[in-house]
Image 1 (tube, rainbow, N blue to C red):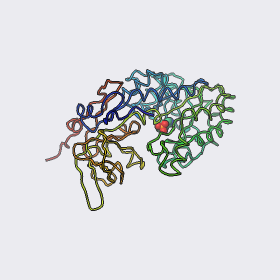
Image 2: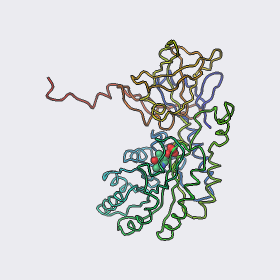
Image 3: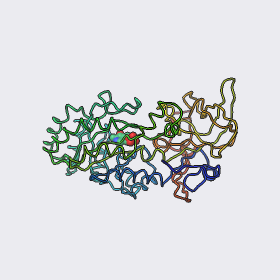
Image 4: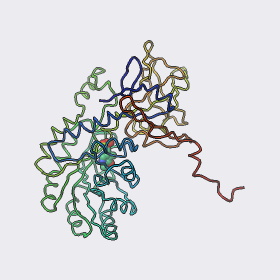
Length: 432
Ligand SMILES: *Cc1c(COP(=O)(O)O)cnc(C)c1O
């Protein structure tokens, strides 16, 4: 579900034609739909309404201040993984007391900052980290709220680079060790044991692995709850989205149709998990990133050249893997649509960027209409793990970002300049 649709052959974000934005702000350009962000949040929030809960948006998926503000205004909490992300939440007007701080490598200064700002919980990933948080809290004369991240050792059946819930991964504390570590943590004077957390992976397209993990961890949560006055159980993020609409509209072949029927919705998620979670009487936290932001953003790019080799039709565009790395990094599929709908011939095309890497492509052998220099394309579902993973590789400035609300559009990040990229560098003083 999202608000990017053709109106009279022009691709719109809500009430604004993307071509208008491309002309005004230039390309490559990220465009986000505020309504899509809000509606995704609300869908999940409503589905979980039967239990006391807090949806904590995973800031790492899209950390633009305007996006964070949109979600803060909806009442969202935030899942942060660095001091920088906490600073963003605060700058956006979000509430630090609704933040959970995840990540395997929190530094002393990050812990201090989060303690001073009063985050809701540190989601702790090792015993050494627990010791460190206890020591920092002692020094600041504060009590640090903590939860241990349990690694349930459940295979999420997702891409290897985004699975986190097995013992092959660096994340969490092994299921078998958790109780002993809680017992030792309970003796540390500057900690308050506030909850239990887990997160098994990203882009999960069925509810089965979530259910399997919850069922496995539940007895442990109940035992810990009985011993320590726990307040919450976080079941993490990871709800997948539809990247390839061929899957959603059925059709192509039997396995795609099968996948389409299994598409994960907040309703399915809640229906299967709530009966397990409700009897606990704990506050339930969720940490969705992609589910909220993924389909709420597109990357708009311009065709610079069309290059035909003996075998291939290449559309060389002005966006590249430094702007959107998902195809190169995760073999990800992004739907690609021309901003002006075309009829006529369909040509099997590769859409590629200008970077000197053969991994710099957005699709291969994709049936696309005949396009020429100056035409614009939108890469859909680029709202999560898109701009946040952008880099200056090849000294390419970071793209601009725009937020749309109905017929209104606002630049929410100015395009970076080459001058800004160079500003922090200098020649070594001994150079001739
Ligand atoms: C990345 C991450 C999330 C969000 O994952 P999505 O797949 O975007 O929902 C949530 N919790 C933790 C601990 C994470 O590392």
